[in-house]
Length: 247
Image (cartoon, rainbow, N blue to C red; front, top):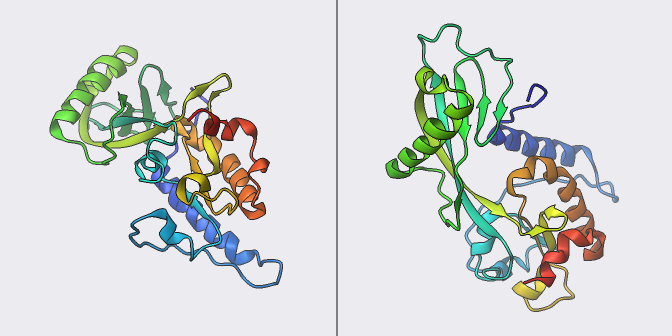
C-alpha cells in the first residue's frame, strides 16, 4: 500500500486529547466564559452514580461497555481479542528495511515504524473477554506461530530470518453486528437500560468501531456531540441507532 500511513494509536490519542484541551481553552461558550477539559478518575458502582454530577454521560468503553451490569446482554457487540507482535530487524541485516517503504496488508499486516522496528498483526480470538494488554507466554507463542511463521512469512518470506521478537501486546475488539450497510458503530441514548426513563436523554453510548476506529471516530464524535447537546437522538443517522431494534 504505497500511499498508506502507519499511525501509532497511543501517540495519536494523546495528541488528540491535547488538541481537545487546546480547542476548549480557545473557544469560549455563548456567554463568553472559557471552557475547560479535565480528566477525572474515580471508581463507581453503577452508571447512575454519575447522574447527579453531569448534564450528560457518554459511555465510550469499547468492548468493555458490554461488561457493564446495566448494558450486559443489551448491546449486540461481539468481542474479539487480538495479539500484535513487536519485531526488530536484526543488526546484521544489511541496511535494514528502508524507512519510507510501504506497510503490507494481506492475511496479516506488517507495519514498518522505521528501518529496524515493525509490528505484525493481528490474531482473532472470537468471544474472548480478555482485555489485558499483557500477553501470556502460551498466548504469545501461539500468536508468533500464526502471525510470523504462517501468515507474515507467506507474503514476505524473508521476515522469519531477519527479525527478532521483542514483545507482544494484546487488546479486545468491539465488533458490531454485520448489517446490509456493513459493520457500523453503535450510537444512541441508553437511558432505558440505565435508569428506565426514556425521556431524560442523560446516558449515551458510543462503541463498536471495530477495526475502523481511525476512519470513523471524528465523524461519529461530531454526530454524538450534536445529539447530546440537543438532547435529540434523532440527529443520529438511523443506521447507527438501528441496533436498538434488534436486541
